[in-house]
Length: 129
Image (cartoon, rainbow, N blue to C red; front, side, top):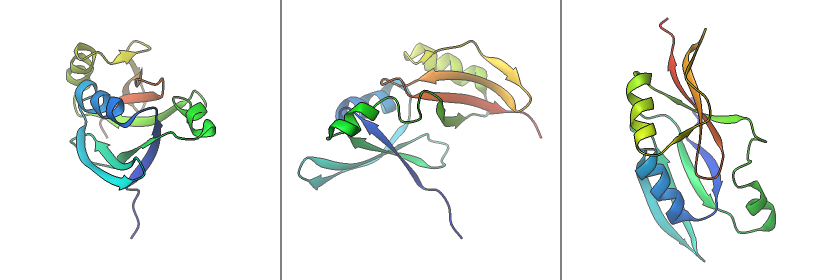
């Protein structure tokens, strides 16, 4: 059986990304291991589980240009919650920028937020089955 374990997110700087994803967004730091030559294996994830983000520091012009635009301006990452109101309030209080008001869709309650680089995420409380 296969499963998706990691999604790479190109970042400007390991430490600033760790601070934002753990401090502001509230993710857990799962691993931060040196790989040599300034590279690190850095994994962060929400405490509820699912695939983790592998934070990869950009080091070529092409990678630097991709920081914040990995999905061409579309929402590329989806964080689910069992309590939208609780998490929306907590995230807003910690400084997460929501780019729209919460809305109700057939699939659940959702609002788009951006990370420190401008990558777009959905916070979603799925509709009851």
